[in-house]
View: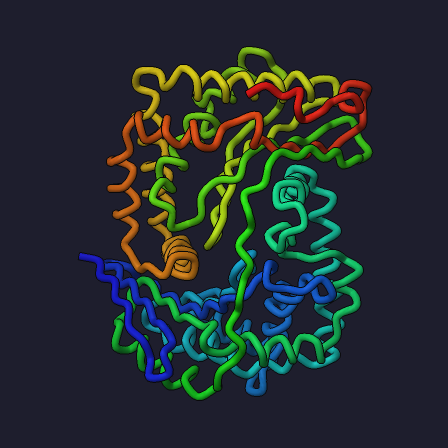
Amino acid sequence: MDEISLEHTGAGIPVVTERINGRIGSGFLVAVGTGSRDESKDIGGISHLLEHVVFRGTKKRTSLQISKEIEGAGGEMNAFTSKELTAFYGITLKETADIAKQLVADICVNPLISEKDVELEKKIVLQEISMWENDPESYIHKLFAETLWDGHELSQNEAGEADIVASLTHNDLREYFRERYRSPNLAVIACGSVESGDVLRWAEENFDDIGEGRRITRTEPVRMGTSYRFYPRKGDHTYTGMGFHAYPADHPDKVSLRLLTAVLGAGMSSRLFQRIREEKALVYSVYGVIDQNSDAGSMAFYMSSTEDNVLNAINTAADVLKELRDNGLQKGELDRARNLMKGATARKMESTNNRMYRMTRTFMLTGKAEPFVNDLDALDHVSDEDIMRVADDIISSKKVNIAVYGKKTKDMAKMRIDQIDI
């Protein structure tokens, strides 16, 4: 059987090991509990920029040497930044696992963060921001978060704003690294063909002596009311985010929330897809997204349409949401959504990379280290009554938030949030 262990180094750094039988790969990850919500306005985007810069070189290796070593070991290295954490990982063949461990430790403990490297990487990150801003299907997620969280730190996107990122210096990054990339903000995650004792020794040898940094403190958002924002863009196509404040990652109804979202917006059999696209042909795409953080979350639905269909699509989505809340689930609807979610989860977990990503987010947001089969079991225990309790709690005209990114037509210019009947 697969095995999961949670131990702590002598310095108190948590070490989570998920040993998966039969895997030919080994993955090692260092998570730092700081992300975009933990940045002051004047350094917005610094977590993401630093994530890039550490790969530029260390006291022991150049970036080319890092690339040659990891690829020569049959592996890959990468990183990701979210609102509440930054993580760095390496995955190799089990026979070359030591290479992954050495490289991950090196970039997390010994990065140069030189002025030259920071200036070069800023150019790349600024191109990434530009590319993202020119992808409206992705950019609407940023705009909806700004609308939903309305000035709270959770409204700050991971990439940051271009002018702030351009102003950051290598001294800013070095200070941020010294302050944040330390215990008590660190955790070590290993997954695949790994042994807990070996991972614990690796963590102690490499991270216990780097000292302590500043513990991250956060302000929990209050549950806000409704809001509507229109963001103008050129082009005939319009993008809409529509949703509600929901539950954090450790909420007892988090799984019921996932299934409610799936019934409404996952797959071609979902209510929103069938009504808005298949029956009325108002949109090209419509789908639901759950975003869960340590102390807050959201349930949102995203649509793309031509400008003339936006208001009709929003009102139709409101009708669908109201219908479910007031009239309940149809026969077999929950089972279909449950199996869809179980199948998607099982397929994802066939990847060591995805398994490690899941464990990292789960542990960093909830402090729990549990096997993914618990996610499948939890889906089986959700009832129709659970779904309806969550729907009644979350879906309301008094709680809906809408962001629209497109041309300001006459309909959209006249739209008010209190006109949306849910």
